[in-house]
Length: 472
Image (tube, rainbow, N blue to C red):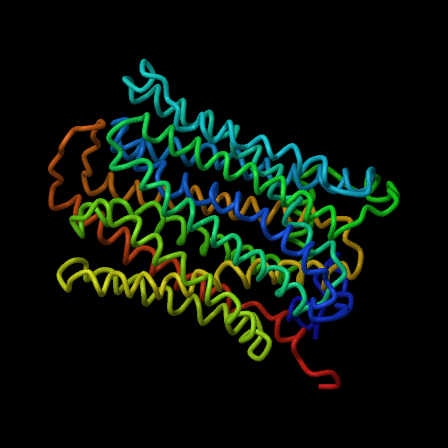
């Protein structure tokens, strides 16, 4: 039995998996360096949250862009990421081979903040024309995503580059997940408060300036953490010669590594689902709960549980394994999404409780897949991490694709339901079909997507191999 693929024999051109060295539970990793590394996720949390939470709503309810065009303005830039992220991954591998580290590319990504501000700073003459406004947002979204990729890809390659074992990688990423949650909470809670009810572009610009400063400060702290965790070895140049074009590397890592392929397929559905929920929150709060300001409350309920449950998920995974815990998260997430369909008919307590369930599951949906990626890389390549960036580039491209697909699917549901866009300060009465689209797009659709993710994830076999007692 092939331990990595679960098949009886290796696939053509597929190497047998190397033994995964479990050199510890991560306790050997210096805590100060680990904390500094994790703090870099605070800035990342802001960027992965705010555009996903507010950008679609900003386009439709402040700039007056129709839902189908707004969804397209968010989808096309993310489509660029499908090519961009693997290229950045390849570039980071080359940097590590030539210079001994990925720090130069990581530091370049700290220029994200100005592009983030420009995303919302739509000039008056442009804002007066919905097509032009959509083009402005799309163009700056491409720039911001490129800078984010320059930071995210080498940053997330760090746990794989480190010499630690199965549980150690989960420990490292549990620190990251807690801090990421803080960043998501800061972005998700402060952004709606600072932007108000979308009554002016100026409010959004102030929001972006405040959160942009927050982002860049923690990005630089994260650079220092990576430097401390991975002292630069002597450059060898070996990886430069064997790295082909970025897209060829994508094909190679997906073809040769079945566990990684299954994990990527599942996470595409997970990322799509969670970003759909983020995009739908303002619409659900305003039109189904009749409380526009409740977006902050629901966002806090969605994110805050991770601060408490991430350490608990880590402890549970030491007994159950990551795969079982991830399947549990996916099942309860689907159930919680369906519970939100009750809306205001049962009061506000039920929607808040269901959102808390989603939040508890969200912690695991972020922790386990990210900590399983290094497992798949080490299983395929052993201690050779010269292609870590290639794997990470494919992974972050998958996340970016889901980040685009989620809001786009929700905007498509709004368009099918006849949702009417509005300019800042305008009051529009939505039709019954629009209300149905807002509700079903926020509840039934994510439940179905997460059920599909659970079905795909059930095909992952590597975790059982890694947690099997020795000699069995």
